[in-house]
Amino acid sequence: MLPLLVFGDLIAVWQHRKHFDWTNVRRLAAGSIVGVLLGGFLLWWFHRQQDLVVPLIKLEVGLESVILVGLHWYRTWHGLATSAAPGPVKSTATGVLAGASSTLAHAAGPIIALYLLPQRLDRRVFVGTCAIYFFLLNTAKLPAYGYSEMFSRGTLMLSLYLAPLVVGGALFGFWVNRRLNDQLFAKVVYLLTFVLGWYLIWDAGMALRNTFH
Image (cartoon, rainbow, N blue to C red; front, side, top):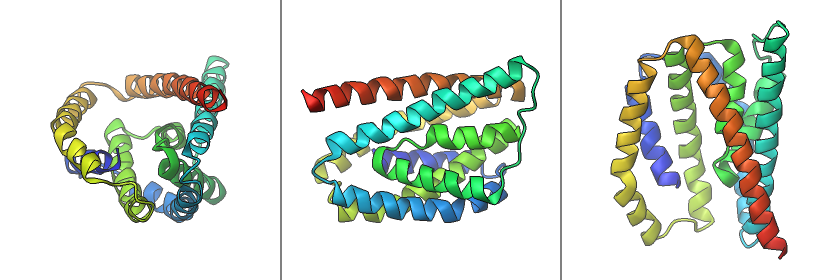
């Protein structure tokens, strides 16, 4: 998946090159580097036990997504403030968690979404910031994947074969983004994050069940 992710990130960076918040990327950078290093070490260490490690990471991210989105909806329903500027501790912790989760399971999307959404960024800035961040993050993961022998001729050829679908998805996403207003965009992202959280929980549960049986 990683070559396809990097390719998709490149397209997204070009599409949203004029709209991104470099401050958020910089805040997340230090923690993300630590997370990638930690995730890379665990990837190498548990190379023969990924059937257990990856589902646990997915389960953790899924539970976090469901709980935090549910908390956001609860606060919104009761008229409580939901906008928050992240401090250095939160930014660093988010970066570490995102870097490790992304390296081990490509599962950092909900984490970053829930970090950025409370800031109520313009939807183009939100997507552009995600594009820049994930391009840097996924590129940083390449050495760890290469060292752990995760790439093969077959996986690279499969990535090349699927690349046109990535282009199509990126163009469709860009078209949709330009036609949503910021309020509707935020609601859609929260909903998708909530649904993705439940999917990660289900996927992790099925994997763990198969592992122990």
